[in-house]
Amino acid sequence: MMHYLRKSAKPIMLVVAIIFIISCLFMYGGGRRRNVQAVASGGNTDGEFFQDYDVAVINGERIQLSRLEFEVVQFIRSMGLETSATVEDLPAFRNTVVDRIATLKELDKEIVSRKIVVTKEEIDDAMREIESQFPTKEIYLQQLQANGITEAELRSSIEDNIKRSMVFEEIMGVVSTDEDELRNFYEMMKLYAFQTPEGFLMDVAHFRTEVAAENARMELESGKEWDDVIEAVSPDVSDHSMSDSRIFIPSAQLTEEVEFLKDISFDVPSRVVSFTSDDHMIVVKRAKEEAGTASFDEVKDDIEQMLLSQKSASLQSQFMQELRARASVEILDEELFRMISHDEPEDVTSESEETSPADAPTPEEEAAAAEDESVEPAEEASSPEETAEDGE
Image (cartoon, rainbow, N blue to C red):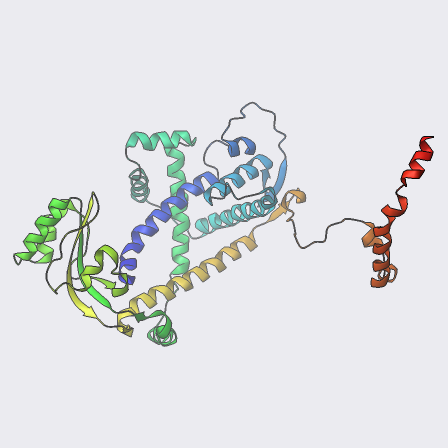
């Protein structure tokens, strides 16, 4: 599993980078700005009256309410908080947006001071990667138009974000680790993080059709090598392992329709297991592994990547805090940014709050008062005779 994560890290980070680029485009200047109420509701208030004014000054640039509220809405959307965010959260969101604007302004200064340059080829590659996320070129352009941005604006934003990422690469370049640190971490965590359950090393392949899976199974039964069979039918294979990257499956996970895999012979292809109409699997069990502790050599690379990631994240956070501290931020409308504290006592005045402890009734007095109240209705009630007399 850890080996799989290492192999998957690069494409995952690429997707994250693309999302970051697009979100930054909307957060910091991309697209046509509208009234925050209109953006939140999806409507259009072009031509509607909106009282705009300066709410903050960041590094000499005056930030207006319309920009602040627009970017707050974009931040809420980017975090997926549309249904959970409340009015009470707005001051915190506004502070976050101001911090991000200030930090990016200082980061852009770093780009200039470090003389960072991005090539046309790098931007072209990123543009192609983003476009490839859409089914067609037409849909890609429609999405840009729907969000009120042009390819030129997207290209400019990509260039800015590549430059920013290059700054971080320079900062992260000083991160390192050594053998002693890796071994110390292993010894400290081996009883918790590096225990391996009993299971099997297997070759696994998923096919798009049952016919293709059955044909591959028969080819394996005839004595052909796993890698050769998989390569020959690759158009029909949706996912697979290779002989140098076999999959470890714990025995505890072999349940229900795949429980029979525990008992099949080694080096013999299993029968076809159909999960859905387009997902059919065959397995070859290669070896059994007993429960135990993974050796240092087995997990060394994973430990190194984890420690380097932790150090990089810490260094990046420290660098971002330094950038924010350098920025000049003046808040012009404090009320918009004032956080609501739920710990503050409510300013409610009542008779019970005005009564001092010395004036408070004793338990005996309270009991007597309760007794008096219980008999008052009987004392106040009129007798039938009295009612008759009053009638006369």
